[in-house]
Length: 396
Image 1: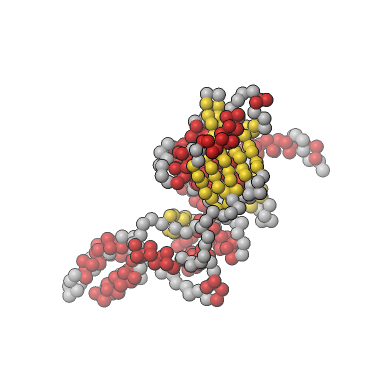
Image 2: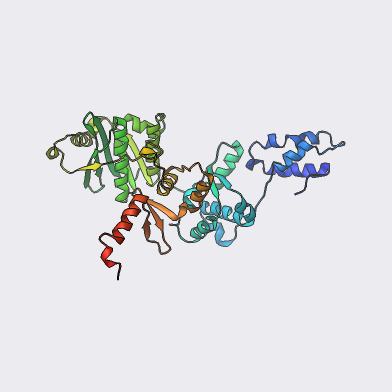
């Protein structure tokens, strides 16, 4: 698009910018030189300030009319289709520059994994070649928010009540001078009870033990493919931080809170209640049993050797972070390494990997998961293959 030459060209440009102002942040400040030029239409002058503001407004409008089956796509697939069509029509720009997609919809979760099917899988592969970054939408104009919600809100009868067949999880953590431990009691709708007692192999405070117990309970529920769960805890701090009433200021608490919220998103129905210690007696008593030193006093106590979160950015002794750890961090909380080339590589390749049970796996073309090994683990496996238990089979 060429720079305006006449007053009519400038008026036409302002009209277009006004129509797209809902998509442009602080459009009034950016267009201020144009407004000044319109004050004197008889002596129109396109100044250097106007030219600079014009070059800072590269806007490419892509339109597409939904036809046939496209009209029946779910709203999230319509948004994904809009991104794919933009990538096709603006392919040179997508290939030459990093692209930031500002949205409040879960596009990143949908378009960053290969375990989807149908057209979504095709779109994931097509977008994987570009450096696309998904950024949460910040505050925008009130009318734009209303229009956006009105366009994407589906009117349907949704039952927001707690599902009748929800599993109940009692969690409690405890710490003293002898160590720290936790106890989990998972109750099924049919009355079955699953209990697990944990003894930590690391020092922890009471609040950290409560978070560790909650994380262990949520992981247990996910392994049992629980859909609806109601968590009962006697820790007011954990309950209020998850409800947003308390602010997590301690760095360790912030990491625990982020990890719990990440697991909560995997449950279609999740609720949490803070109960008095008297109503959580079973889990509380069993958590204290895990702290006793005598083995006969704590039957069936499992050892938890390490925390569910990472305290330090690097391993002890200044050992650099491995590529497996970088991918796991990016998948858990979106943390990118400081090196731009490495960060770009992670964004382009992370969809080929999946985290299962805290370990990193890579999708193969035939869809079995391939276990990604740390360098030390890889050396051990190679030694076993060539010199250890598999050494006898090398000659065929």
